[in-house]
Amino acid sequence: MESIIANWAAGQLPQPTQLQQLIDYELSDRRSAKAWGITPETAEAKLKQRAQLLQALIGAQAQFPLAYQQWTDLIPLLWFLWLPLGLWLAEARQSLARPLVQGILGGQGTGKTTLTQILSLILKQLGYRTVCLSIDDLYKTYAERQQLREQDPRLIWRGPPGTHNIELGLKTLEQLQQAQPAQPVDIPRFDKSAHGGEGDRVAPEQVSDIDIVLFEGWFVGVRPIAPEQFLSPPAPITSAEDKAFAKDMNQALQEYLPLWDKLDRLIVLYPEDYRLCQQWRRQAEQDMKATGRAGMSDEKIDQFVAYFWCALHPELFIKPLVDTSGVADLVIEIRSDHTPAAIYSP
Image (cartoon, rainbow, N blue to C red; front, side):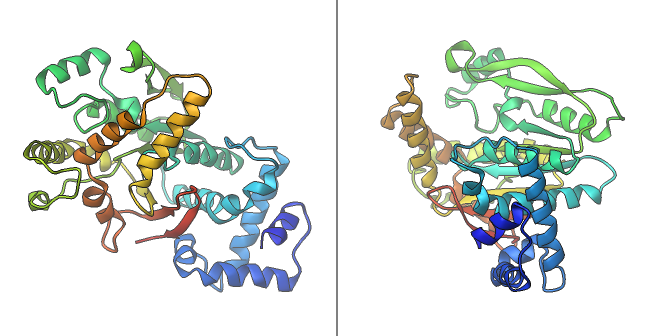
């Protein structure tokens, strides 16, 4: 399949038998075909649209934020994920009379930042202006978090529910949705390196004429669960103190619901095993230390990851979103090598 796609991208139209091969392959994965709206009737038009976009990106010499030898190395991810996802977003935007707010939920190492950067490139080629907003950009200021820690010493790291300025997020999304043409909107930004790694808010970024907002974060769209879920919670929620912390974080999620209500859609980047996030975090720290920069030890990483699993455990909070009755509009299951294992709409 890859050689057919590569030739098509280079301007060599597939033979009818080759095109049928591609169509049959796309339709063989019923879940992804359903997610992308591919049917026997629409398949040819959808694939031609995808091929045209791929040709345009190559012609524009788009700079993808990934290490690769040549663009053909990216064919599987481009063809089967990034391009159809970009077209999916563009189609959703066309049905609205205002900017689309797309939520992207994913734990550590699932590739949220890379995905938003690549989608911005693809959507730009399609004529849409995007802005990326992370829930990290909504952190309370350094001074506010110091006061918060005095009130609740359990908030030893930034990130759990309660450490964000929700009103700032609401204001930002409302301004983006309601902005008039050429009207600037301030996008909050956060510098994680400030105050010795504690982080602090910095000057906002001004944008205008935004079509699509990519709002990403490790618990974007996550909703409170029933209290009885904590009667026999999964590890590392083991002690009475762990359970109390988990219950308090669950309660704190209530305050985020008005922010989640601003989302038009939700994508979930879902590891095949949630424990992969711990493995990916270790690898990221090792890569960072290999460049001479400081990084956390494996023991520190384990403590860090366990802390967030105690706050919002993936089995309790993320899994329900991707079930048949979940609120996710699109789920991208991720293997240990970061490639997509499955793509579907619950």
